[in-house]
Image (cartoon, rainbow, N blue to C red; front, side):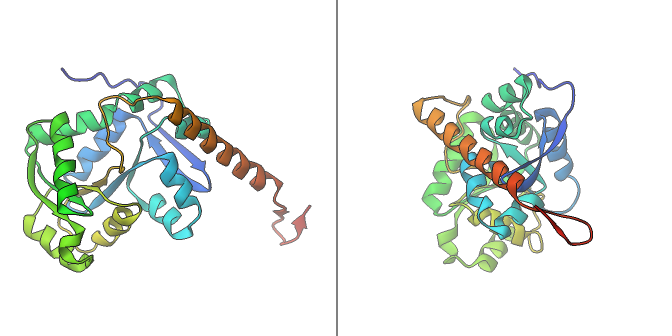
Amino acid sequence: MTCNLISRGEVMKKFSILGISLVDLSAREGLRQAERFLHNGALNTATYITAKTLTSAAGSQELKELLEDTDLTICVEPDILEAAGIASAGRVREIEERIFLREFLRRLARQKERICILADTKQQAEAFADSLLEQQGNLNIAECKGYDEFEQQKERMMNSLNEVAPDVIFSRMTWPLDLELMNSGRKFLNAELWMALPEVKLPKRARHDVFSGIRKKLFWKKVKNYNQEKAEEPKEESNGHIIS
């Protein structure tokens, strides 16, 4: 049975967290965007984001820019939107129930899009493929590849991917490797969409435990401290003088 897409009001919200400027889309609008990517003749990029990856990216200007240049970012955890102050009950439910991923996999299966799976090793790629097939059994997975097969040479990997000619690439690699590779692939790959999923498995519904609560508090504390530090920084007037 098709899931109901919950958001009915605002479907796009710009926000900044830990100095990274991002856009949050409802599941409905995210699916529309992904559908457009499959038919525009260029490689588009998408990545799931977690509190952990955002915290890591906050310490690197290069990673900040790579995240901001990604065509579509999808939250794994509602903590991110809550910390940014833009969470709504509908969006929290969409994230927790993995509605975007479930619906997107269903559409890929229905349209018989060719899919290639990437991971650090071929064994990990095959395990990743199995986890996707558990959620959507009739996916057209054309190939599973490990980056180690190409001795970590991205040009060799790109050439091999073009031989497979996938419509969609799903990757689960050690952060931030797939983020860097998908950005490089814009110039070389004939695929339509490269989507990076996080290292953790994506169950049908997010699970909450004592450790997730601790991680949430630590993330919120980091965001609060960052915002406070920014608020306390001297502001510069248009003529270049510093305001204390």
